[in-house]
Length: 429
Image 1 (cartoon, rainbow, N blue to C red):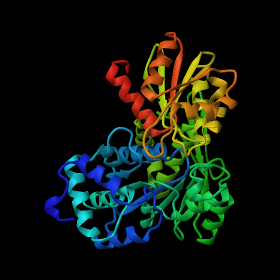
Image 2: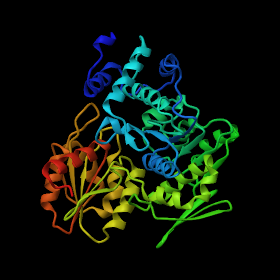
Image 3: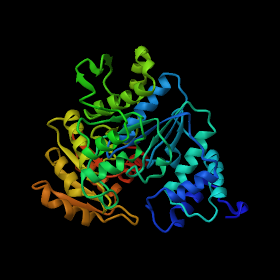
């Protein structure tokens, strides 16, 4: 592309990137590596965490970043997808980069690209590496987008591999079972470098790859643990014992994400264990939109980006903890390549009625199709279909008493649509 014809706004760039590559997902490192090397193989920071897994990646990244900030370390993060604005994907010291920085980075990637075609995600990942490499950071915290072995982020040799709980998701790309999916996730492991696992029994394929690479593994519930009590969380790893605050993010599952993030930080900064006040400040400052986030009250409205069975199980636990014994209606919006019946089955014990909203786009499905896919697993709760998430949310709110609750779940897009609609109607508070 002639540099004089480069898009002048971020929105124009993003529309171009969405349409230019023939496949939205095109796993493999060869094309991306070629462009990365033409860019000068930018490294985002002297030390890096690479985070893979099925669920809890965003919360774990947020925890690592909050701890690094509290310890006075300059850090950058790269996460996908975004909830409200693309800029959320690339943050420096917790602040999303501005449009001008992204435009400069996109122009640099475009100049290095030549005739090589890149996906939307690959292009953005290279832009993130370019931006962070120029920001004089101490640490980079990089979230894998899909899988691990063939994901563009895996161009990096992470100093610490973090693997959050693994479940069945994206089987069409990663394989049919947990062993296959675990093998893909474990592609981020590097020889001799530490691995932090956010579950006690990750797939055997993860442990085998780590052993083959002489990479030491620490697992939540085995080599380190976190036990929540009424006055906080007791964290232990070997001879180290720390008294920590409860997670700032809602839900009992966040205890594990918090512990996983802390274990990762202590792996690269073991001396940080002596600065307990900084660790406590960092953990109390963790913030992440769309993770069982309450947007309004009377009736309470929670939104969560969960979109698979593992995520729904965590949301169900958080819901039971937040509002035991109350009526809760669910606004559900899911892409057609997901498994809504499994999600609905996990949530069903807590839901009195379902409001299925249609999602647009190439992966979208109508509210009617979604409703038909969950009806068999949620009787006797009524199931209704709506053209979109906003209409489904309006109906759920209209049917709710002030003491009831509404859960919005199913995808990042669903959560973002609900938040946008509540803000536009003045209901968010």
